[in-house]
Each structure stands twice: as C-alpha cells, then as structure tokens.
Length: 254
Image (cartoon, rainbow, N blue to C red; front, side):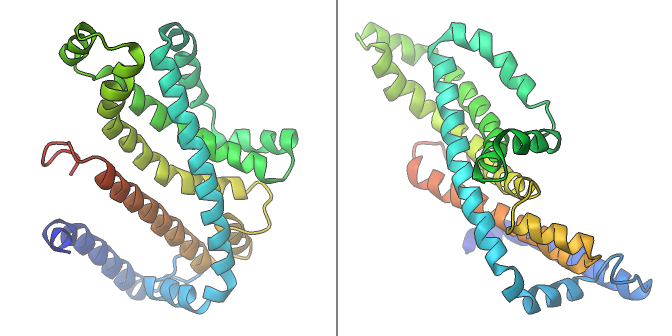
C-alpha cells in the first residue's frame, strides 16, 4: 500500500483525469451512446450485465491460463535448447523471428481449417503469441552470464550441466520473468483472438455479439475486462518473481 501511495497514484490520477474528460466530453458534445458511450454508461452496463457475461470471463481465464502455461513452457524449452546447442540456434533462430511476422488474425482461420473448432487451434494461437517474448528474453539472459564467473567454474572443474543450473539459469531468471510479464498480457489478447475462431463462450464471443448488435457499451465492457485481466496476470507474475528472485540489486526491475 505504501508503495502504491508513493508511485501508483500518478498513473491512477492520469486515468481518472482521462475518464473525467471523456465523461464531460460525452455530455458536452452530446455524443450518442451507440457511437461513444460515456464511462458512466459503460460502468452501469458492466454492473447490470454481470450475470450475462460472467461465464464468458471464466471461459477466457481458463483458456488464457492453459495457453500461457503451454506457451511459457515451449518458450523456455526453446531458449534452453538453442542456448545449449549453438548449431541449433544458428539454424532455427531466424525461423523463430520469421514466425512472428505472420499476422495471427490471418493464421487463425487456417488453424480452424486444419484442426477444427475445438480447443487445439485456440491453444496454438495463444502459444504462438506467448512463446516468443520468453524465448528471446531467456536467450538474452543466458548470453549476459558473467564470463569471469563461468571461467572460474570451469577452472574449478564444473561440467556444462553444473554451469547451466548453478550459474546461467539463475542469471537468466530475471530475463525469463521479463518475458513472462509480456507474455502474460499477450496471452489474454491471444485468448480473445482465438475465441473469434468459433467459440461459443468467452470475452471474444461476448465482444463479437455486442459489436454485431451495435451495443458499443458492451464492446467497451469487453475491452475493459481484457485490460483488467491483463493487469491481473501481469501482477501475478510480478508477485511470483519477487518470491523467487531475491538476489537482484535494490532498485533493479522496480
């Protein structure tokens, strides 16, 4: 709470100011609710419609968690493999970069054609969104390992396995969590995109139905739900990071 009072009040004040300006502009210029609803209207819709979209939230959260865990595992395994086998890194790293230049929104329909409308294409979408930041961050962490410490361990007789688990992996952990924070926010977006593929529930479905019926207020409710879930996942990763990494210098990563 003290940390929030010290640092968090500034962004909170900016957000509050933006909402005040938004609300005042909607009233002053008499903007139609179907075009741009006022924050008060969006809040009212969100409260009154809770029963109609709460099951969509739970579905998206479940899909996000599963996809994030799989995507994170894939990203970490790829990073470790490319680090331990330099020839593999030289061959596959450019392909990993290229994979991120394929728009997910274009690839998604193809996944439906190949794998149907089940859970698998949705998980693939989230995995593709999540694995890249983690893989790249972890590889950077491995490369940033102190060469003097590594040389010292080699002189002391440590083998490659001992050097990796006792030096390179701990050194890369802050970088891994940096990638996890990015992927945590991307995973929610990936889940919503995957739900556009033909799911029967989820925030993406709720957003599509609201958009097709010109319920702009519900579209904004969906947007705010995605933002809240992204921030929540981001905060969880930060808490896990602080509980696992206690050797970072004070002020680093804050």
